[in-house]
Length: 117
Image (cartoon, rainbow, N blue to C red; front, side, top):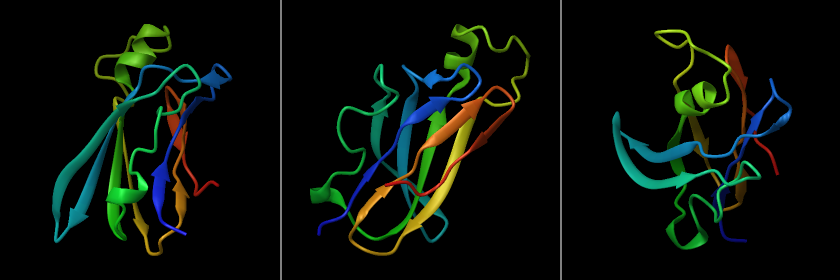
């Protein structure tokens, strides 16, 4: 099996997928971050294609940054300045050539993640 990475965002405060969130993927090595992909969530809260497809997959350390501030403002969930959550980084490792799924469960004042399937 070849490896690849997918993600999605669920708005747990509203109970629905989070559409329109930009996600940036970085490869992390030796303390340096290299941007390798960008995507925006669709109406199902997912990216249209894997954010890291099979042909670009390498094991290693990665970071997904979910830029959720605009989404939270547009959906009327926060007017705070500064916002409690604006950009959410999730750093994780991929140690084998497999399907990794790293979702974000989001609310204006908290988030969680897990290795999904």
